[in-house]
Image (cartoon, rainbow, N blue to C red; front, side):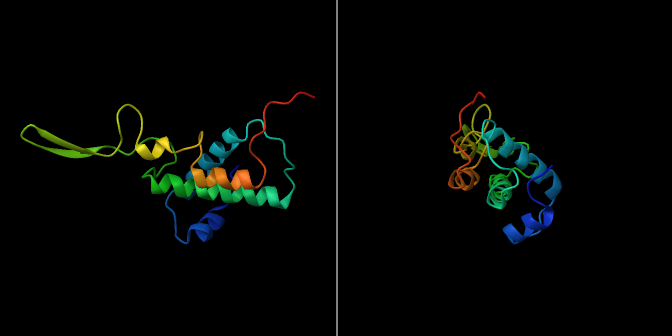
Length: 128
């Protein structure tokens, strides 16, 4: 289940988003990965707002990087050659673009910042 609705995402971004349900589901999964060991009150409205906003920021980061499916795949490269000179644009090397390198774990910096400011990050494994 996604942490934000399509309506919340579109209000947050100020635009209609293609594949919004898919993007929200995948972004919520990314948020879950980042919070794997976190302990928090799921009924706390502030926590719910942080999860929603972080999910929307994750979708925004994905879209800004050219990832229109939320899969994490780098957009295809494009380029041209003239004689012996070849110019490439897009992903770098084996596995990602420079933008992908700026992620904090599975999250874009703005999504991480939302969770961090809400006190949801920095939790290690706990035993009871």
